[in-house]
Length: 263
Image (cartoon, rainbow, N blue to C red):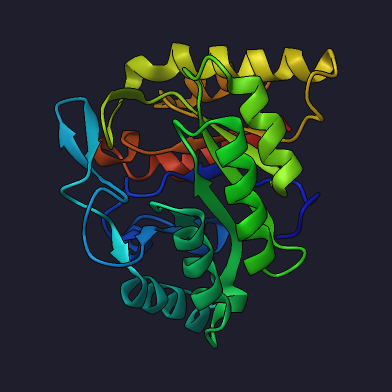
């Protein structure tokens, strides 16, 4: 994908599917951008987090730091060998960490399978968002779509989105996860209201020209077709599925088909 291309109606959240290759049992992956990540560099630590089930939702935490780069490259290679595309999700302790992951994947023989890069910047201030996106933009192929993952609960959400676009983001993922502490985030159906509020805030701010505007992805509380439609009604251009797939992986294709028919 290139900046400016229409987003697919449904994306997959990084970390919500322990091995996205397993989704091949449930539907045609040619319709899906598989998530690769979260990806981190260096030694395990408070860099990134996986998602682990706790009832109807999940908690991300630093004790499960996500993919190392070699494991991410293996998954990218698997996608390339089957003509599939993926979204690389990166998290890091510094802008250098983020750029290093993207650069290493870019130099791989299978880099063409990467359709977009999502940069997790939840909790970062606007200046940190700007620097991180700019460094990733330098490391990524020139026209590759970059997505900035921001917290819907950030009181400075509009400045953060403005900084993300200034740094090179072509879309913003509005994440409704609730922060529980350092590197700990709660995800589940109850985050839908927070996610939609963040989407509405950014959509209204774009209309008021308080930031340049960009496609918005609603990430949080999308667990069926009505909640997906509600996110689009709030101003989102696409939705991202995560913990909902634990109960029913086929939901991915049902929501995708419904939103495509409604477009």
